[in-house]
Amino acid sequence: MEVNKMNWSHSRVLVTGGASFIGSALVDELIKRGARVRVVDNFSSGKREYLKSHLDSGAIELDDADLLEPGVAAKVVRGMNLVFHLAADHGGRGYVDLHQAACATNLALDGMLFRACHQAGVEKVVFASSGCVYANYLQTDPNEILYLTEDKAGPPYDADNLYGWAKLMGEMTLQAYYRDFGMKSASCRYFTVYGERGHENHAVIAMTARAFIKQNPFVVWGNGEQIRNWTYVGDIVSGTLRAA
Image (cartoon, rainbow, N blue to C red; front, side, top):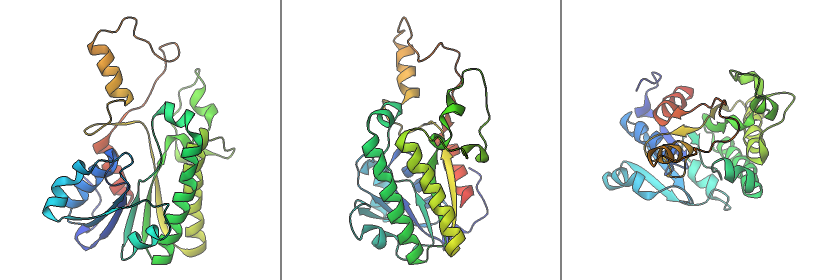
């Protein structure tokens, strides 16, 4: 996996949500690069088994904690040079549509963490954002194929549900911290990710399973002519590291 030329052996790195599907893959690569890694995760969706080899070898420091609890963010960012912020209340399409109050807690989580990063003197934050920040009309027009670039998120702003709005506000908050205080950041807009350790109910796995059992008719949303992007988790990790 090619990444930038950063000397990771001199880096003290925090990965929030580091026991998750994507977070644990990022931790794996950071350890290979020689970074000193701390993970914070409340294990609401992450799994301790994803980190077992690193825990057994003492390669990582683990905080089993909720970033929404008072004092946790300040504790875990202390002494860190770089923070990869992947922790979030999230799920698939159905979860985003049906659990908007839960997704809205990301506004508080992100704000608390970014403030703690600034106060602790963290050099840079790499934020796991989402394709949901893009306006709904760009994502739902069946007659247009778009390559979504950074500037297409708005204005005008019309993010996808409260999950998308929370991610958009996270990006804008980090921009404000750079303007006001000089804290560097990068926001990586992940699109549907698949790969090792992916959840069984993930769209790629679910559709593959339906094809394997020869489901007939094979039910899809829409008219079957839609185009959807999938991103391999290894490519997500590579891009996230480059953003650092």
